[in-house]
Amino acid sequence: SEEGGGATPSKDVVNEIVALRVSDGSMTVVATGNDFYSNPRLNPEETELAYVTWNHPNMPWDATELRVRPLANEDGQDDAKTSNHRLVAGHDGDTSVIQPLYHPHTGMLYYLSDQSGYYNLYRAGGARPSSILPVDSDFGGTSPGWTLGQQGFRFLPDDGRLVAHYPRDGRSVLLVADVRDPDKPAVDIARYDTHHGLPRTISDVVPGSHGTLYLLGAGPATPPAIYRWNPSSPSSPEILRSSSKVTFPDSLLSTPTRIEFPTSGGLTSFGYHYPPKNDRYRCTTESSPPLLVKAHGGPTSCASTAYDPSIQFWTSRGFSVLDVDYSGSTGYGKDYRRRLRRRWGVADVDDVCAGAAFLAQRGLADPQRSCIDGRSAGGFTVLGALTFRDVFRAGTSSYGIGDLTALAGDTHKFESRYLDGLVGRYPEEEELYRQRSPIEHVEKLSCPVLILQGEEDRVVPPNQARKMHEALLTKGIPTCLKVYEGEQHGFRKAENIEDALDRELAFYGKVFGMEGIPGVMEIEVDNL
Picture 1: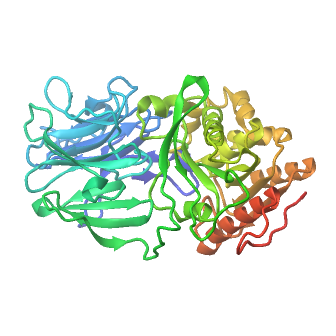
Picture 2: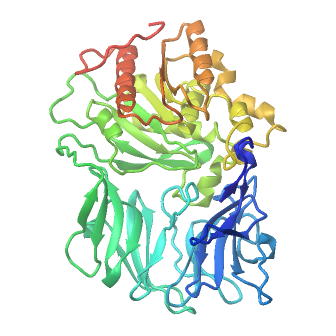
Picture 3: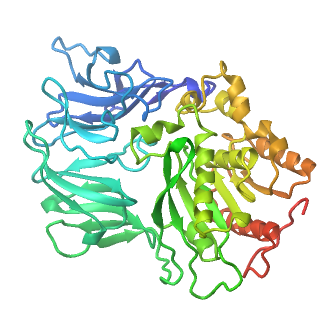
C-alpha cells in the first residue's frame, strides 16, 4: 500500500505491506520501515509471510532482500518492523532477489536470485539456500521488477511439479521439473519450445488441474493469446482467446532473426533483424533497403519478438528494421544488464550505432537512409545518437527524454533515484547530467528530426519537445513537431497511434526523397 496526502509529492509516499480485513475494512501493517515492498506471499499454513523489499537508490533489479516474518509472535504481539524479520536472501546488498513462492505441498520457500549472474531458481532452507536448477538464462519473465505480480515460475497443484519459462536465443523455453525432494536439485526435467507447437514467446504460465497449463504467448505472426496445453498430450496448444482477430498472409509478415554484433569496448550486443517483406512489390533500383533502428524503453527493459504491427508496418513498406537489445537490457544476465551503470547515454548509443553499421556492412541496410526511433527512455537514446554521433540520417523521438536534470528533479518515487545508477548521483554530479542531456547540446544536431509529444505529459513535459524543435528551426535543420492533445506519456488513442506511424513514414519519405509511397499522408516539414 502507499500512504500520502494529496498535497504530498508522489516521491514522498510511504510504502508498506498491510493485512486488510474484508469484513470491516480495517488494516494492520505487517511490514514497514523500508522504501519499497513487493510480492507478499503466504506459506500454505498461513503462519508466515515472505516478501521482497529494497531501499533507495537501488532498483529491484539492482539489490533487494527476501525476508520472512511470522504472522504473530509467541506473546501475541505483532512486530511489523522489517529489520526484525528474518533475512533469507540478499545479505550482500548487491544481489537482486525476486518473485518468492511457497511450494503448496512441502511448504518450502522458492525464489529467483541473480547471484550466479543470471536469475535462477533457489530453495530456502538448511544452512544456506541452494540453486536447484542452474541455467545460463534469466527466469522471471520479461523486464522483471518493473511491475507488481510478476511470477516466472509456479507449481502444478496436483503433483507439485515446477513449471517455469526462460528465453533462449530469442525463443521461450517452457520447463517442467520435479522439485519435491527438499534435499535434492530439480530432477526429471523436461523442456518444450516451438518444436512442440508452443508460441515463440511466453510471458506467463498458470498451472491448472491434471497437468493442464494456461500460457500467455505470442509470436512474430501471432498476436498475444491465451493458450491451453498439456505436456502429456501430443496435440498442439489450443488458443482460448486472442488479443486480435486480424490476420495477415505470410507474404506480408517479416520474421526476425536474432543477431549478435560487435560494439564498443570489445564487447558484443544483440538485436532482432526484420528484413523487408511484401511479395506484392519488388525493388529493382536499390541494392539495399532503408533501415529503421528501434530503441526500446526502460532503459532496463528488452525487445520482444511478439507480434508487433508497428514493426510489420515498416517491413511491409520496404524498410529493414533492427530492434536493439542494447547494453542494460534484461534477459542476458546480470553483467549485460549492469553495462548501463553510469553509462546511460553512452553504452546504449554506442550499441544502436554499432547495430546499424553491422547491417550496413553486410549489405542489409543503406547507410545513407538509416534512421532511428524510440519512445521515452528509447527517445533519449534516439536524441543522444542524433546529437553525439554521425551514423543516422534522420530520427523520430516520441516523448523522448531530452533533459536528464529535469527528469532527476521531478519524477515519482519508484524512479526518483533510478538515475543514480544509470548516470550518477544528483545533484552532486549535475555536470555529468548536463553532458549527457541532448537538450544541452542542440548545436551538435545536424540531421532531420521528427518530434512526437503528448500535451499532458508530466514525465517529459512538452516544453522539452518545443525547445528541441526551436533549436532545430534556428539551425535550419529539417524538422517537424506534432503535439497530441489529450495524450500523456505514451499515446493511448488509436487515431493518434495511427497518425504517429503515418507521420513518421511521411517524414522519412520527405527527407530521403522517397516518391510514390502508396497511401502516404501529406505533411509539412520545416526547413525543407
